[in-house]
Image 1 (cartoon, each protein chain N blue to C red):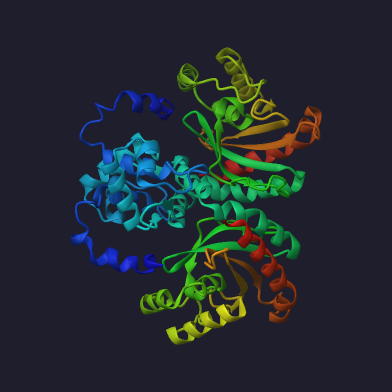
Image 2 (image 1 turned 90 degrees about the vertical axis):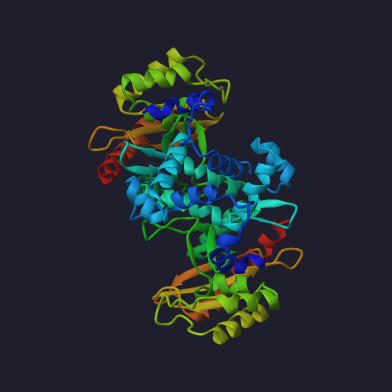
Length: 266
Length: 266
C-alpha cells in the first residue's frame, strides 16, 4: 500500500517530480475537480482561483476541455458536461469491484431492508463504488464516488484491517483524525486497537462516529490471495436498529455477502 | 447546440487548434478512457497502442496519473483507481440535472414498477445521468454514464425534439444511422419525421430500435426558458407491456414527472 503516503509526497515533491511529470495534465484535472455543488458554473477567473492556476493556464485548460466536449460555456460561464461521465465509466467498467459488488449490495439491501454499500480505500478515504437502498429516504445521495475519511467509518476500518503491519503504521503515522461528530475516535492508539479488533473479529461496528444518528457495520472482503480490496457495509439509524440486532440479523448477511463477493473477485 | 458538430471539427482541426490547445491534457484523458471492461489492466505498450500515443508519451501520462492517484500499477500492469470517480462526482454534484432527477426517477420507478431513466444529449449520444429500477433483473447495469446513440432511442428523440431547426439540420447532416437492431430507423428523413412528431406530441415511443424485446417511452423535460436540457424515459419488455398500456398508464406518469423536473431545473 505505498499509495497511502503519496499525498505528502505530492505536496513536498513538486520541484523534484522530474521531467516525466506532466504538469499540464495535472492542472487540467484540477480544473475538472474545481467544479462542485457550490461551484456549478464558473467564470475563467473563478476557475483559475479555485484551481490555483494563472488565468492563462486556466483559459488554455478550459479551451482544451471544451474542445474535447468535457466542458461547455456560453463564452463567460463554464460548466462540466455529461461527457465527464466517460471517465467514470472507464473506471467502473475496468475495475472488477463495482460490477461484482452491485448485485450483491442490491440483494443485501432487499434482504434486510437497509442501505448497503461497498467501499474501497483511496489513500486515507473510503470511496463508495456500489450502493443500494431499499427506498431512498434522503433524496439526493450519490450512489458512487461518495467519500469519507476511513478512520471514522466501519467500512474504512474494515479496509484498514486488511493492511499489513508496515502499511498500517504508515497510515496511522499520517492520518488526520478529523472529527466528523463529537463521538469520532480522537487518537491513533484507540484507532489502531479498533482496526486490530476488526481484523481479529472479521467485522467492525461504528456508532455515530461518521454521522450522528447513524450506526454501521462492515465486513472486509477477502480475495483468494488474502488481500482486502473492498469492504461491505450496512448503515442503520441508531433509533431504529440496536447493536444486538446488528449482531443477530445484519452481520450474518454481511458475512455471507462478503464471502460471495470475495469469490467473485479474481 | 454548436457542440453537436464538434466531433468533425475535432477530427479536421488537429493542425489548426492553435497554441491554446493543450495536447498533453487531451492525451492524458485519452489514457484514462483507454481502459474499459476488456482492458482492465494494461502494460505501457498496450496503453500506448489503445490510446494512439507513443510509448514515451504514454509513459509520462501514466506516471503523472499515478502520481496523482488516478492510476496504480505493480510496475508493469496499470489500472485506474477509485480516485477517477472524483471527476464524475465533480460533474454529478455540479450539474443540477442528476441531483434533481434522481428522486424523480425513483418515484416513477416505484409508481409504475418499471425502470425509469433521465438522459442528456452529448453530441450524437444520449448519456443517462439518473436511473432507478424497481428491482434489477439484469444484474450489472451502470446507473450513470451509460450511453446510446440518440437516433435509436426514445429519450434521444425526445431530446432531439428540443433542438431548433438549424441545430436539428446540423444533427441530421452528420448523424451516423447505426443499426442497433434490424428495426432501427434506417434513414434521416424517417428520423426527422419521428423527431418532429415527438416535438408536436410531447412524447416519443420507440419499439425495439435500441434493443430487441425493449420498448420505451420518453417525454422531453422543458425548462422555464423552453430549452430541453434532459428527457425522462421508461423502458419495458415488449412481451409484458403493450403500446396501449404505455399510453394509458406510463405516459401520464412521465408527463407529470417531466413537468415537475422541468420546474426544478432553474
